[in-house]
Image: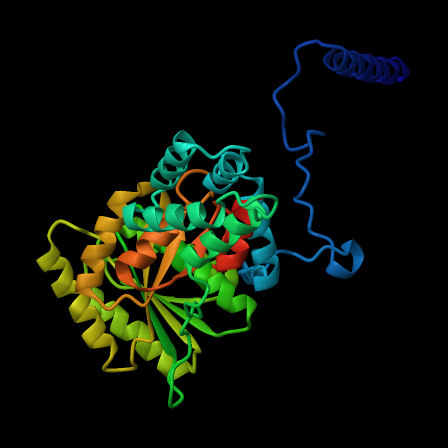
Length: 381
């Protein structure tokens, strides 16, 4: 009996040793038995997010739309600084016809060759034949050598050119209306003359003077012109009224002026189409625009935009537009003072209306009121 008990105990000890060896082999790289319910492979439960109070991070809820930032509006330059820059630009221009004339008439001896050169300089600068003859005759008389009393050539030339440009003309922009209605400025000119850009620049001048302005994009045949005008308006916070592409220009002009009346604007500026395929079509279109506008408020100013570098072509354009609408003022763009400064004289004589604004550069504030004396002074350096 005792031997049997020892035998059972021995078998049990041997079994335990075998199991222990099997476990050691499995953990040291041997082939393991298939996992069972008692395996030590643990699948960790998903970690719950910590409460907001503990993490300090707010769980994303619904997406909240960020409010668009208000656009930063530009503050345009005032008139005084524009005029100063105008003088500097003109005075800094090399080769201007004013300096060429001054050099010629300052010669010790004024022979016929010199007078011919003076005539050529004036004609090349687009002054025109009749004004050129007038200036030469006056200069001949005043610069005739009379002993030691010969007048100063610069003073004489300055006075003659100033008279030619005519400082007596009224160059004020008619931008205010009557009876509480806004002034209406109609801007006309051929495409490519800088017409739409000029509308935007005039708006900047008025904004600098604290005027409330509405722009009408009535050049509906050029989508680029409408978009360009909208950009100008956005930069200074000016409302721009536009219509569908190829829509009725008169309808856009009407809505722009109506908006100006309803909102109490000081001035409405209307950009128009500048096509010159035929005069009859242009006349019909601009005539209709003006008639429709005046159902809301009278047109107080009609500005013709001309590219100063086009010379005689610019005068042809001026004649066509003056026959179509009652032009009251001229805007000369690209007037760098170098070779075509005489166009001021020629176009004023052609139309009998004053140059009111001049542009000398591509910058947004490179448009300034025209002043005859300052213009001549700058041309002569």
